[in-house]
Amino acid sequence: ILGTNRIFRIACIPGDGIGIDITKAAIKVLQKLSDTVGTFTFDFEIFDWSSTTFKERGYYMPPDGFEQLKAYDAIYFGAVGWPDVPDHISLWGLILPIRNSLNQYVNVRPTRILRGITSPLSNCPPTSLNWVIIRENSEGEYAGHGGTTHAHSSHTIATEVSIFTRIGCERIFRFAFETARSRPRKKLTMVTKSNAQRHGMVLWDQIFAEIKEEYPDVEVDKMLVDAMTVRMVLHPQSLDTIVATNLHADILSDLAAALSGSIGIAASSNLDPTRENPSMFEPIHGSAPDIAGKGIANPVGAFWSAAEMVRWLGFEEAANVLMECVENVTEASIKTRDLGGEKGTEEVTEAVCLEIEKVI
Ligand code: ATP
Ligand code: MG
Image 1 (cartoon, rainbow, N blue to C red):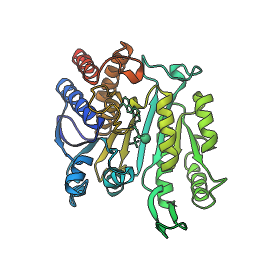
Image 2 (cartoon, helix red, strand yellow):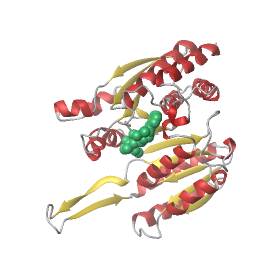
Image 3 (cartoon, protein in one colour):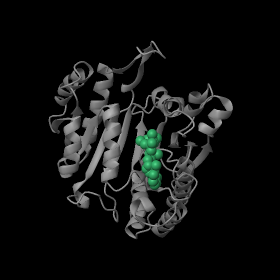
Image 4 (cartoon, protein in one colour):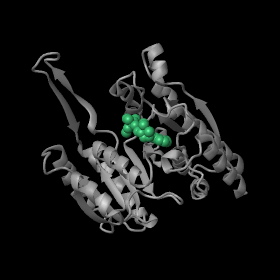
């Protein structure tokens, strides 16, 4: 749909900590891909919105920040958060409002074991873990509703209200069913906690049962989130596409990332399926202050996220080429420390660029 030889304007928000290192690496690899594959060009604009600028200016995004972002074809995001700013301030300063205001109601987290990487699970040969987690990204437990009364007293009460709407549930389930249908196994596992949470989670279950009727060719099952963690570890091959709420999928996808080798390799896409707004691509890890600026951050999750951006922009084949090149590098044991290797971010990046050059 998007044609060839197009120039894509990409808004890059490196953010904090290793977000800066890995965004630099991703831009380098994307440049190399567009130079080599040649059917598209990226015009990157860097936005300095971060905890550093927050401390200087008092805000993460300027008031017209969303309007600025809307002018781009996609957003590439590094990571946000730094120890001297409370995490809920940094998350609500940047990433959550972007997801909300740009209608990015789906978060997709692909998980599989890349060549050359071993799972910490001994029962997990490479082919037995191949999942896509579809995370509800606009409401649920992260809706931000609630409040605090009797603050600073011994009677303090805080509420954190989860929001589940019919529209929100219907659209995420349809997206999940479409994803499941597009994959060979046509299998969807829905995650819930309706045994203990009796309003929102019950609506979630009920709407799932309704939407299921539209997809008779997709095999479904339903798991309580606690039992789901056990199943992911003990029977990874029994899962394919997974749909879960904002909070549940957040937690399950960190587990998924660890099971596939490292949190440093996991990718995510924040999508507005209507395509009215730009979608945003980011590795799932955070700013990792403990390793920031040391040149040892694993850039694979950043490359995988970049590949998903290329795919979303309409270049499936180029996205697959990029992942092939990344896997050639991991298979050759050019890996960072989190994967048991000894290479730095730049060495891995250079190795991927060399692989891309070999493609022509
Ligand atoms: P957030 O709240 O943003 O999710 P977090 O507190 O969960 O952040 P992360 O920054 O995701 O923490 O990372 C947790 C730990 O995992 C880091 O401290 C770091 O040691 C390791 N880690 C994360 N990302 C990478 C990476 N790309 N390469 C190597 N190690 C990483
Ligand atoms: Mg985290």
